[in-house]
Length: 224
Image (tube, rainbow, N blue to C red; front, side):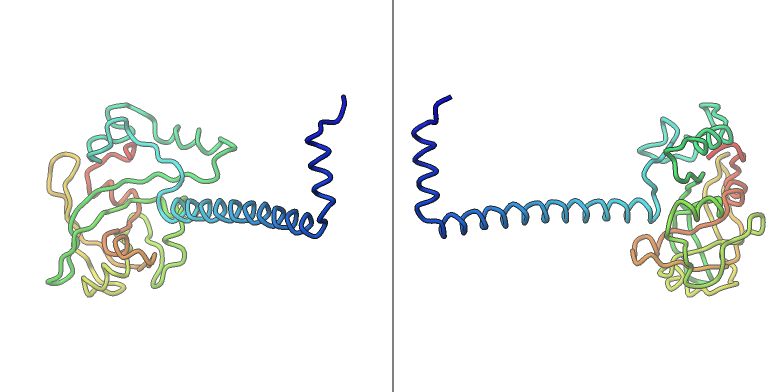
């Protein structure tokens, strides 16, 4: 195929001023590598932000009853109307090679009191062993230890502890609504304090073993 006259003109122009050609090529190369670096850096930052957000509390995937959102009602639980076997579901998730960690949870809103101070809170029932493999917000605690199941022990965020003027071994009054429509209330001992650095979370979350929260809420063990 004969060479185009435009190609000959182009090559001749490149060779006519070699210094200009070299500088132009260097400029293009530097610009290309700068773009590659910035894109890679921004993607890395985004991936780190997603990882930080999901590993702190929520995880990368949540499984709920089909009717749970948006109201987050205690009546719309896995193992409730759908009849799902929670233990079988967890076993199936555990054997999936793509799953790094999984943990059951129960959530409920309510009030926490210490002396004359009261704070609205989001109760979170957890399996302590499983939870520590999934999320970061309880590891390490700034004070105390993890709660023991069956002992009515709980954790609160540093900001909530400050608002309640509560310390380790203090008894906190916990009030919520039971799954049977009753008023759910009991005493829990504060055994640990966590601090995520997110004031909203540290001021509202109260964590206890999942079985203890299920008992408080009159929620059968097979419902989460």
